Image 1: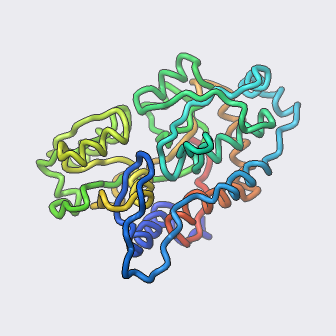
Image 2: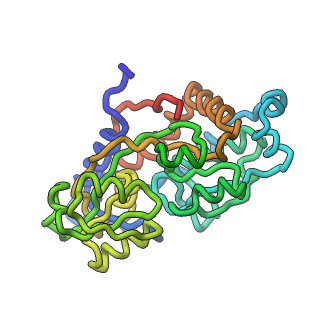
Length: 322
């Protein structure tokens, strides 16, 4: 990727730094809270709200696949015949899949991809049945054929690839360390020694903390909001998960947290989960290639992430092939 000025981690980190310099220094992933008071600050603030009109209009430009393309793939054909897409996803990730409770629509980078895929197959992005995902349920719903695909900032790794198949990757992240805004004790991975660290069960967090901070005391929770609640209540000292989730929270609701370590550990390549051995992998990868080639990946990245974090660096989609 010679055209790449900064990698995706750096772009988002740059956006976080820009947002922090404008007073956006901490947040929560729950219901929206008022922005921090910026009296005396004459600097123009980053608009952290997504441009919903631009998002909706871009989804509407996705052209439906022709019948021959659908009929050639058993996974896509089954969805077309059913007339609905059985979607496994989340609705609480600020940058990737956030529910707008006033409209019932979901916005974010994951939402952009799954709505576009649904429109590509069915001609209407609203034709889906939603199943809420947690880190613990993603493999089981695919194995039990409860959903057609899982979109949930789902990290590709060898352990999971033994249980499910992946299309993608469509995004790359790293790990970050979140602490309370008034915590000045933790500023590096080494500072996690002897500290209580929250991670999401079923995620890559437990293994990563064990590798990079083996003397930390790991405490597992099912969901992001449970990890953050433990942090806010002082039951844990830090929270380790994908830095994209932390940064989304920080940008959205200032005042609660601080990103003590913005990036560490291996690359987290986000993929789209499908049932093990599904020919849907080929179909989705072909769709993603088209999605990237016609510029929609870059446009949605700008709408969902770059414009909301202040990131200005050029970036590209990762190479496909899980």
